[in-house]
Image (tube, rainbow, N blue to C red; front, top):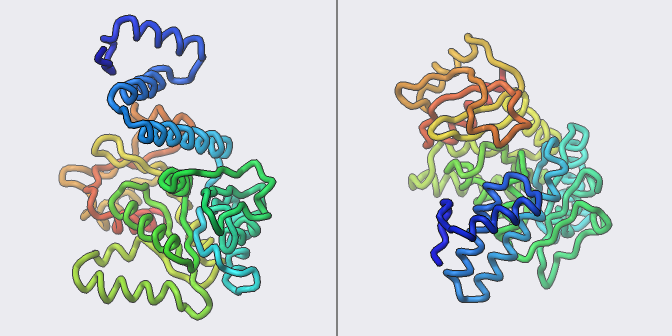
Length: 342
């Protein structure tokens, strides 16, 4: 039979309704679509390895949501850096200090769960305020001793599922010096924020005391990518470089002074706030950031839109809405920083 997402499947729809009723699932209409997708995959795909990948991906995403869902009310910072950093190295201790300060400010920490900078992040925040998002590798990636007995550990088979967890759950990303993996995460995070595929978050690059890692990287972006027109000047507003772990933590905390979170509803950008803005403050933002507002749109405080009911825990927050041009994400981060100055 041909399976459809509409209710044209005859007895199959009746069976699904009964299964969902017996299973007592939340949001049965959405679960129905997930089940139908699985059935359609069973019809369309006869290559077993592909089906196994789909199965494992769903399992890993389910486990991710189950682990982090219990801590939905707390902000989290993902920390990246080298697994090869020794405990006696100054940058290790700088990461411990940074994570400890995040904990004082009320944040939880997410790391890859391995040694080096990952262990330093977990050590600074403490296992009760940390997550270890591990990956099965033949080397370098046993769960570090800080997290080995914690319930906040998840181990992935697939890198792409792990990457989703790192960013989906993060309210900020902090990067210490590292190898290919660290640079991969830096560029991927920049790409996702620059293109709007990830909501605006602070990206903080924490260098050693000599500035020998991220500052040369910055020079490459400026002297090669910017000079050739491969990036825009506003893209430098997507990240902050600092040598000071306390400044790094403060940059993250300041980002959420007034700004809470955001999402698109159709073409409208809805920015949730920790406090409402005055008419005068809105007028200032409208004048200073007219470039990012689509013609014919104006910034306005608004009640929650009907489409936002899928996030019931955020419905009480005040909102600022406007039609964003979906191009200038570097300027959008500047907009948020200006908003936070009120």
